[in-house]
Image (cartoon, rainbow, N blue to C red; front, side, top):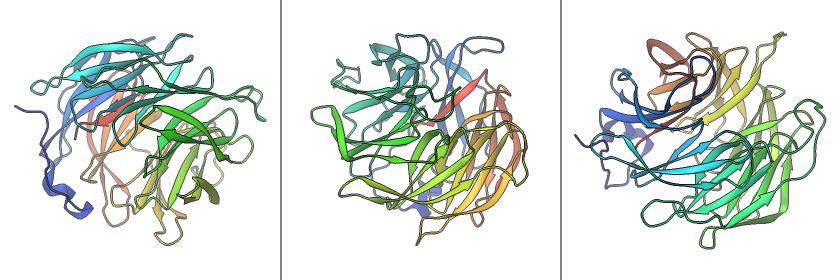
Length: 374
């Protein structure tokens, strides 16, 4: 059975649920060290009608393949190996019949502890951030899906106000603009979202003017995403439990802060840190994860202003939600419970954005990333 349903016509968000196959392949990046560890990258299949996940199967054994990204053509998968001073990024071919992964090659990530991987919108380059050394690299994709020699690199410098977490730069994620002209690197150590000019043909990354957007000192920006129409962008701040909303000017790449909103309940006095942020395929809702409070915070997006209004916190079946993802139909949210060694499934209320527990989950050791094969 083929693992991918090919879509040849343009479709609207409203019709997404009718064009994707009932069985949607999904991959999980994990940590492989310590108690309750896994063996590498796992695969499963999501039933887009019921929310049922099939039993997880090892797709490829690998060391700490924490973050993954799948090539838009559906034939290749890329994973960072989050370990030590000599970080690597690996390319895999996806078997179209089984979904298993075959290692093509690996390349240096350009720094230590690589933590995030992405692909530019033309699918010509892999982009990676190195948390430990505070740097980002661009690695071209060869015709066979393998990785060529790295061609682009930037090293961050500086510090911020938190003496435990911000003594130096910590590049935590990299995302590209809707027009593929800019790359945005959220640096937890600097309290900045760095803005770079991206040349996808040359595979280079260069300082932009403006060079960055600041967030509140001590906030610790982690992951970044654009809204559905590209006019607004959002960064979730790991250290102070907030989401910062920006308006976006595409000609210059400028981000201008318009709002900062907490991810935690009023009066919460415990320890918690944010991880992932995602916008619903409809563009109506935004979600952020809290580790410690162990919840997904849900917001409604004002389409005219880009600002956020709190909807709810969902806590059922959630334990250290390192990552989560929304299936392309917009019906289900899958939460990777790093602390619970499981992936839990929630149904999304299409009117309010609220998450409804389905009671469906699978056991996966230390899951930290979820990617769908479209």
